[in-house]
Length: 230
Image 1 (tube, rainbow, N blue to C red):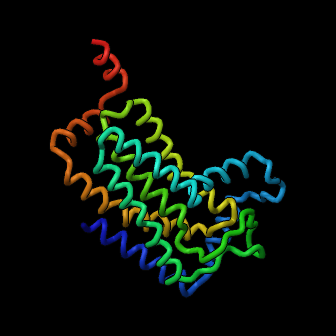
Image 2 (cartoon, helix red, strand yellow):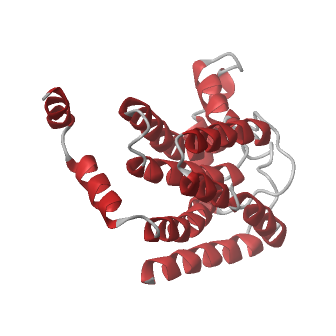
Image 3 (cartoon, rainbow, N blue to C red):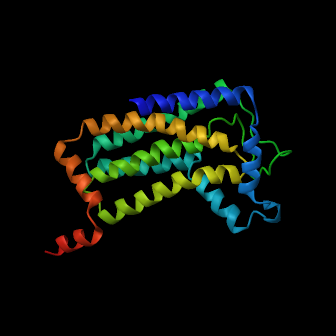
């Protein structure tokens, strides 16, 4: 509970500061460091393509297709609660839109940083970061409690989820779509949604499922492999 209150206070404080001061000094410095004088790159460079496609998975249509795939997958394996809570996690998007209107921060300017992918609307908090934190974060968690799904598939998706959550902030800054403080706000807002959704999801799990998932997460892969061969 204390952690959750601190999350809300941190987000509210950051939003208040940004509302009255834009951009923050560290935003410009850090953005230029992350872009590392990228004027020498073109849109066919590896750096641009890498960061572009990290963000591409958060475009509304692409994100909706990914959501639909996992929801249908969970329905197929009769994991109805998991499908429901994944849908709940996507409520971070309308919440993010409301916060953008309230804070009303402009996007990064071409006069201050390179803007490779111009975006419309307000800047704070980053919708991509908030969405990746809430959706992919919850997906990472629920895959510990879905043993009917192939183990290899679960581990690959979990690795992808962690990778996207970590990379999306760098992607948004590199592309000039957001300031670093926008991405920090996105992480905070995503956690504000993820924490209670995860709590209520786990409250409905049988005790055996929780203990089995914990043991599976701690058990070395080699041990599981040997056990499966018996």
